Image 1 (cartoon, one colour):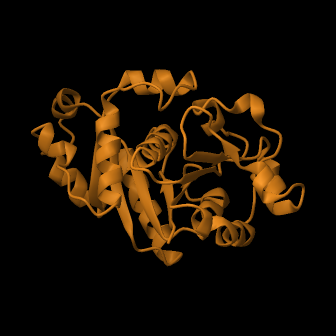
Image 2: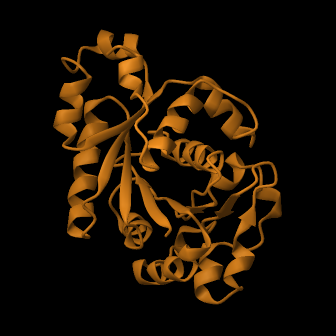
Length: 249
């Protein structure tokens, strides 16, 4: 049975799309068939990160609007066997509604082990559409108060939508900077304030951002991929050590 997970963030700039792609690659390496749907209409970027931007003809709005067969808007990532992606619309005017995206996911979910939905930042209509067909959520934050506040807003909205299974991913974590800023007594305090159970800590990694922008995600090994592999394993019911223990925070 397919797992449908929305990746969300209360504010922009948390690296949510990079986490979405990194997790998708890690799941594929566990021999899972994965579809990554980009729901950030007008701001799509997953196609660039996966190096398929030149192949795109149709997008999710075409698939739900009858402009093409659904399969025509699903693209194979040539360098990562088992990973498929559906791009967001180029224009924000073509944002899909929650009901039609829910129906789309219901029709295709049995073809995949995982469907990951990269939602727009915030709690607006784009987020509502992205989360409509999801069973659970990963909330991506950075270790700072504005991001944690955004997490609380996302949790509230998810709860209103009936999605109670949400886990926290702390992204771009640098132990020295975290201690130096002195915003929290320790990482546990941040997690407590977020009111969300931690599932992964992804370290600050300039390399992952660089290869993502070059469309080379999944083709090279970078430090943050260890955290993505552990995250994927936890979603599969395994219990690898959390990065916070590895980092001795």
